[in-house]
Length: 62
Image 1 (cartoon, rainbow, N blue to C red):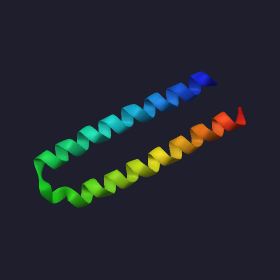
Image 2: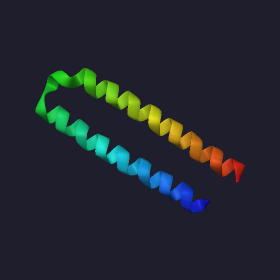
Image 3: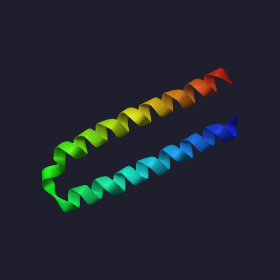
């Protein structure tokens, strides 16, 4: 069970890092993509919140 939580956390970190890299590439390529960047950031925030809440639920259940 602990292994599952660790795997989930690692996956989340990897996804966040990839998204950040993509955002940096977008920002460096053009400044007109602010709307896209903002929407991506919102999605990332939502995903992180959901994952954190799921992990907390798992910890509480166990």
